[in-house]
Amino acid sequence: MAPPVVHSLREQIREHIVEGIVRGRWKPGERIVERRIAVELEVSQTPVREALRELEALRLIESAPNKGVRVRNLTAADLEEIYPVRAGLEQIAAELAADRLAEDVSALEEHVARLYEADRAGDGEAQVRHTVAFHRELVRAAGNSVLLHTWESLGIGVWTTLAIRWLGTRQQSYAEEHEAVVEAFRGRDPRIGELVKEHVLGCAPRA
Image (cartoon, helix red, strand yellow):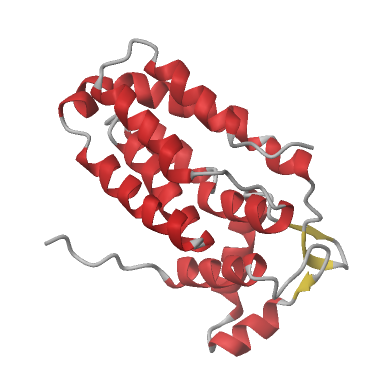
């Protein structure tokens, strides 16, 4: 059994803030007060400040002198920008992982099964969770730590959730689209990289 994942205090605070933004506690343009979060979570302001810096690097929030930190007023164009970058990374990952996944695609199949359940239940949170997990497994299968780190740094889960909740971006069937990717790996499709790229670009919100 794998050991439990232990998140640092900074990571826990970051996830707390992200969840608040996703769920609408802090809306676009609204100020996030560092001191209030520290008091609420009973921590010092230092790890809160560090978490906010990471979210600013992710372009989810912005800061200005004498104005503090605010949630960015994101548009469809802002959310769309990440998809060509992500598509390029996943194209490379798919090509590197092709032989490995052709032999054993069970890690991807597990998330497809969960996506069918989520589709039937209309469970948006589960759709996002297993979609992101599916693509993370695909990138991980490439066996390239730099590629995985770069992909992770894009904050795919956050942006996918925001695209759905803020813009109403939703696929007809998450499961069927991802099952098609699995079949392409299983069948050793020579165009697998291009197919994965097209799949990611097809999920992008439109400005």
